[in-house]
Length: 470
Image 1: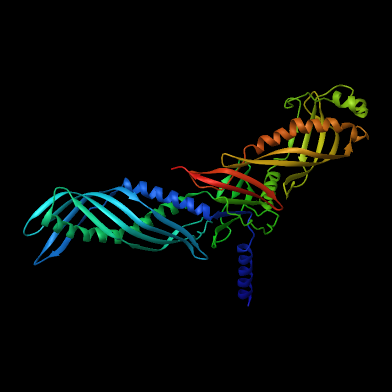
Image 2: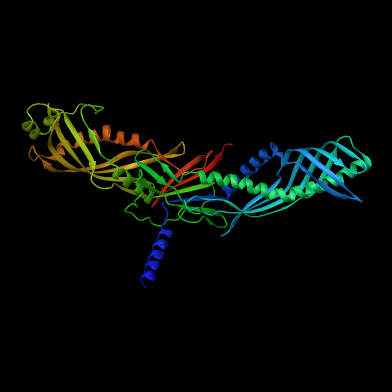
């Protein structure tokens, strides 16, 4: 009974894990598939035109004897794909149909019978070749998307062979016995060649890093959350989309909420990045202490801060610290900053504290006062070099005095000074970190072109075309 209960508990936990909502969704539209088809066929064409095919040799029946043939130095010199289509099979995968393929092949040949033998060079024209292939998109145990050939069927059509310098009876005789092995080679090698190409793509997919470092403090898990969903107009990929503190893969204390990518098809690719993704990044950087900053005289960019300056604003500081000393400010977030995505609005709320110290001649510090700070900022986002970048803008600042060693004073006296310090020191420091950007999930040699960012409630949507450089 105990084993049954444990098994049921394990299954329920596994079910919950598999049903976890993604932090990021990727949608490939029909337009994206069409582009992938064109790129794939061009790569296939280039590879075929520089490839030397294996030699063919064997025997064919000829009257009471055999015709021995050998075909060598086989090279494809031209390939044309006048008709090709790609479509989605809901719940199954991707169907590729290549019709009326034509090839021009150059080769050496040698034929021997008991009566005569001959050798030469020939050009082979093959037309009306049809290929139908179906691919599936499984997932490996590391969360990589894979691609495999589920079925493949070829039909070869007309073969026209031109033998250099041959005519009449010998020409027709040789052509008759050269056509058969070429037909067989097409029938037996076309699908294996496609399978080999798919394996190369699959190896590339498996080599992709699903854990992508952002910097020394954080990394992103872009592994698949579930099997790719293939429907009639799209392929949808649900990615975990979790930002972890560097090397610490403990689940964040948040739950991803479901969201739906809008029904659009103008772009090749859509990346929907949820509020959950950004909230986990906030938690990762908060855990790493990235929201803590110290401002001292030697690091202050725009002005020298001292007890004398604070004393000119707050009489209590002047009375407490007669001698002018350098001042050090320690700012820290007291809880995980909150990310909010609303229509055309991306905000970050930070609850924190700031403690002001006097730096004494012996390098020790003495606390003057501590205050709570609540900052509301807007984040402007853009894409550069395959990364999502952001910059902060301070909207609103609230503060209150929590402790003072110099006596009570009106905190409003510091309003202008605090705002100036945040605008000139804290915000630029944060923007310098944000300018490094979050790497977006991408394939090698693929770049985003004309990306457009839309912010809606609960997620950020990137609509983009892509370009493959090969």
